[in-house]
Image (cartoon, rainbow, N blue to C red; front, side):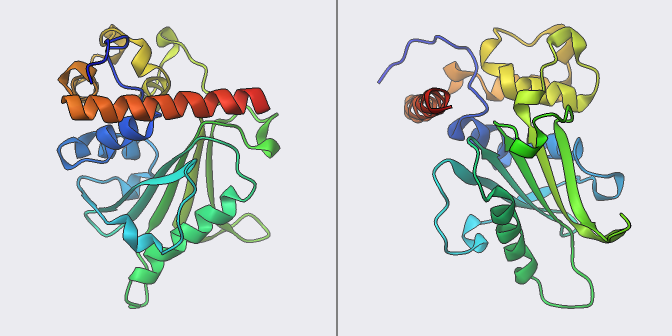
Length: 236
């Protein structure tokens, strides 16, 4: 089917859009650049290998909460990256559940490699409604706030809280979050985003460069995303 090109670029919050940009071998530089905006200096990555998501257990994942990407850094760190489209009562429990599988893959040799779960949330946690921070890093601490274990981290981004406009973007993370929310609304790469990595993103995300089969898959994914959001707006 041939679709009218209403948007020039794909919506990165659709299942198709997110996986095309961040979940394919030719575009892994985009994934690494995005991850490195969130990772501490000692876990910055120069290469990733995509892993089969079959390693994450046998339990089916809910359609509104998809483990989109499972990959491994060059020194063994594992990364679970997902988009969460709607509130879920037990989302922290599920994050811990999936983080346990990469740990169980390892053979015990007195030290475990790092595991990061990164959630891009299209909602705000109920407990965070009055909190202005959109970026949350969760790790194990003792009762005095001292770090107990450094190799298991949960990083959550509450996208609705990120409201900066193009002229307000300062950090590299700002630019990525702006594009996650607004790429499909743009007609070209604006001057504040004129960087090599973002030029690659715009080229990768251009709908006209998709095959007809890919365009069909994208528009089905976009329809699901819009229908899902409409239902949640009405029920909210």
